[in-house]
Length: 143
Image (cartoon, rainbow, N blue to C red):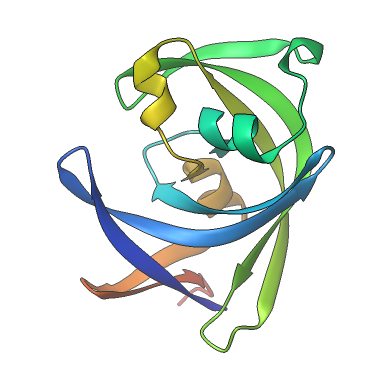
């Protein structure tokens, strides 16, 4: 597994971005997600939830109020979803993971993208390798 990573600037720092397709109950879309090893949870952004899914927010219990990127967000439990990435040969790699939805409580929260968090990286033994301009998401195979 060697998934190409794009880099972009967000909140004054260079961030790693990966394209991903996400499928689950009332969820089926493709987006660019920011890889954030400082985020404890992997979640779909408020904007992606509102514009790319048919999820009725009122049907979901708000799990927790968390602070991400300076904005407060409620997390809703979306259950198991399939995340599909494409490697350097354009081969699909599908991984099932427990996802959350981030519901912004203020306007600041709407700018936060979909996040691939520490939980996803750790559970599936994934690392970022490479140098600026040529980075990849790879599976850690040990020494």
